[in-house]
Image (cartoon, rainbow, N blue to C red; front, side):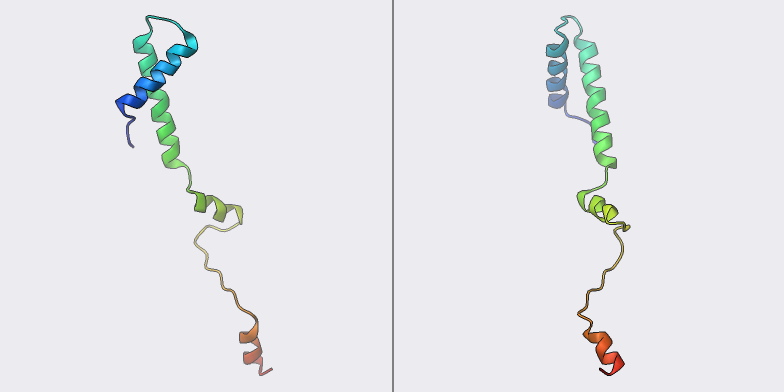
Length: 80
């Protein structure tokens, strides 16, 4: 798991400070920001990719081969 950068934590901590406007909570804001960013990172790593979601929506596991034909193959097998 990638850890959030110091700059990301600093920006989020500032957003939290601006939201509550309580001076003297620097450490609490920093820790809250760090925890939030770690949770977001963890969720992002476990979410399926876009193509996996599309395959699942179509009812497949994403590992199924699809064969497309015009029906001519069946005609040749039957002998017309």
